Image (cartoon, rainbow, N blue to C red; front, side, top):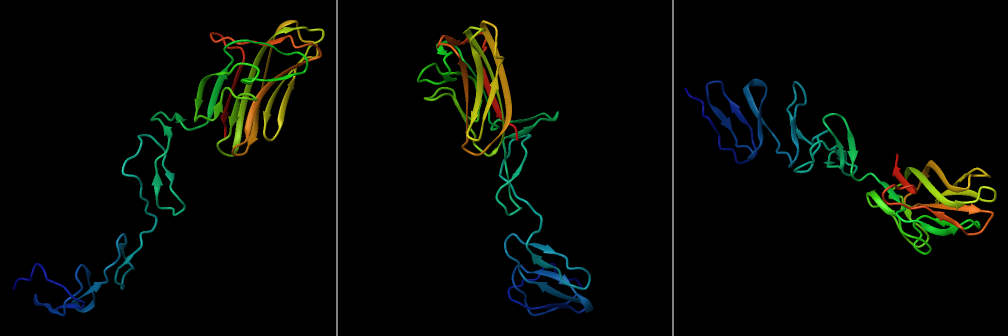
Amino acid sequence: MAIQNSIDLTATGVVTHDGSGVFTGSALTQYTTLVGGASNTISSVAVGTSGQVLTSNGAGANPSYQDASGGVSGPVSSTDNALSRWDGTGGDTLQDSTVIVTDNGEMTNASQPAFCAYQGTTDNNETGDGTAFFLGDTDVGTTLTERFDQNADFTPGASGGAVFTAPVTGRCQFNMFVLVQGMNGSTHSPAMDIVTSNVTYTYGASASPPSGNYAMSTSVLTDMDSADTAKFSVTVSSSTKVVDIFGDASKPRTVVSGFLAC
């Protein structure tokens, strides 16, 4: 005797197989899952909810629909070689990122703050009398020229000086190179400052620098809170305001740069 290939089940109930190819019993809820039980019985597992999965509960117990555990979902599309990152705190949703790891292992991030800017023209007679000249101060000098400004956190020219504004809390590396002209080695005393919201880092040059052109450089890795700023100044003291801040577009000698390190 042939066993039916399908049964139309529309209401709650249990179907029993009598061993001779006959299914008997009341109907079951539509879309339930049938499972084999003891004594040739077939019972049903209640319909789960959308997104649940059918899970084994071990020998001697019917499986059941349960919430998925450890599964993750993501966007419809993603960027090739981009690292995935969590979206929210639920632990089950991923999102795309701008962090790229090439097939050779090189890592880049187009959103990582980084900048480099230089002085393209000379600002004449800006210090020498103890005046602090801030690079990129449009009130008394010229704006700096950007080589690059990744993530757009650096303003190359503004009242009070060019300024980097930290987009997040972290550690930032800053570098400063300056060429001053018109130095009088017997009287002038030069210094340069990296001025942040938290602290001012001062590089004091030799008390008796050579006359004429004098190059200085300094750098620092420092803490920055979100929205903190960093500016760059040059001060030459002990004489009159006769010292120039050199600028050249083809061979930059006065340059500032920085990046978010960690």
